Structures are given as structure tokens and as C-alpha cells.
Length: 126
Image (cartoon, rainbow, N blue to C red):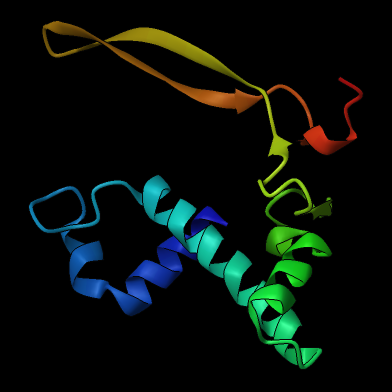
């Protein structure tokens, strides 16, 4: 999905994408990605409601309540329902940081890595 957000930004906002973190550019691709995810979610709900000839407030709400979607493969093909009115998927990550010498300074480097599969919080017995 992150690649899809980059591709989408390159296609529809090429000047801002090219500027990147500079003034006037897309400052946070993850925030941009979040907006894109919700846009896809709403597009899916509107399409589902329209296909059932119920393109109204109640029809869109019903489409959201009955939606089962894999988010275009974002969650490793796992599907989820939007009945809780939130995206109920989470994944736990572990950060690994190592200090390396760059010039005369020590700087942190590393990454964030998943330590498990996606978890659907709607399926957890709380």
C-alpha cells in the first residue's frame, strides 16, 4: 500500500512529490497514505451502495457496516469488517537501532520490523 501511495502521488501530484520534504512538497508520505486509505475505503462503500441502488446516507452506512475488505492486499490478504467503524487491524513492530560513526559523529541507524502477523482486534475476546 505504501508503494501504491508513492505511485499515486507521483501520478497525481508530481510537483509536490518531486519536492519531497522541501517547502511545498508532500511532507509526510505516511500521513498522505492514511488519507489515501480512507479515500479508498469511502470509494468502496460508495461503489457498493451504488451497485445496490442505495446511494443515500443510509445505503452508504449499510455498505460500511457490511463491508468485508482486504484493503487491496495491505494486510497480507486478511479480510476485515468495518462494523466497528474503525480499521481494526494492528501489527506489532520492534525497533532496532545501532549507533554508527559518520564522519566525526555517532548517529543512530536501524529499522522497524514486524514481530508477528496482522491482528484483527474485532476477533479478540476482551
